[in-house]
Length: 366
Image (cartoon, rainbow, N blue to C red; front, top):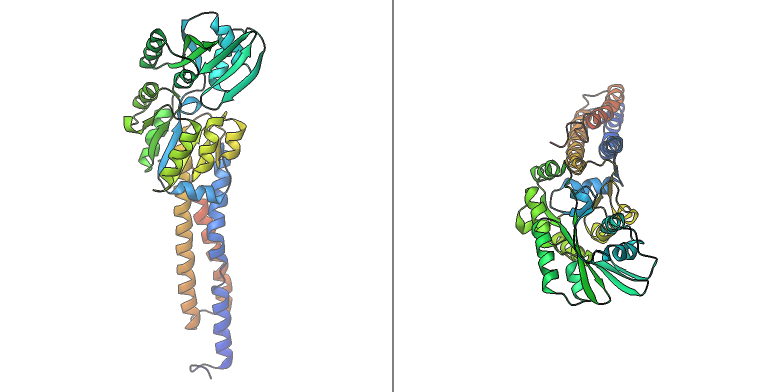
């Protein structure tokens, strides 16, 4: 006799206990929720590398977002030109080997003056090349000034373009600044909606761009981003430094589309590459948005939070089931046959809970 029961009864209780406490539901709690979320996300055009990426996006923190090609449509065009008109062809030739949006805009504006040689490109800054008998430098004003002396008239053109919200690009020839191009890129129609949704989800949204500070603030103001969170003239190295510093205070996500953003995306807790991103940016990212709509960024973060909530619900149910069923089995109130019938129900309940998750449903983001 054991605790007033026969050996047979004790064995029956032990068998029931072993059956009901089988950790099937507990083992399925996380992978089922994650699998459902990843499958739904893929059907919505959001490719997520794995459960780790979902987990990192589930906790809000700082979200850095690139401007050109991310918040804007990535359809830069030359809309203004000050200075030597012949420099358009030189600039197009110097930029002909680059895939940067600014390079594409300059090449679309004029036919190249010839084949460029001895090309040197600095990410996020500009390019220098030899075109014919001329040494041509094309890039951001601050970067070109380091190589060629500026003139008051050039500085005035740069300021005028920046005040209008156009991106100023300086062209220098043989050590002299000769022209300034003004480029414009329309803001994506859904950019404001996407950023507002991210703020509601708890993210601190900040804008990073290599563009002029005045242009960045103008775009940020249109999208409701405070001036203090709009950072212009930011190099790829500066982006990495900003991400690294922010990670000391919590999770950091970096959203971008270009080569300039790849290192920062790799340094972030989670990197998000938008549709049309450069291959190196996609490789560095944890999430790739195939849809051109960037509202998918907020939907992804909301889906990650919903997935984490589902996992917690599954774990709570599994632990509660094991505790309750185990207690009843120890007391002898559950027959082994009943235990065998109830045990699969716990796994089915976890499956049903995962399937009814709000993660990546049509109504997300909230």
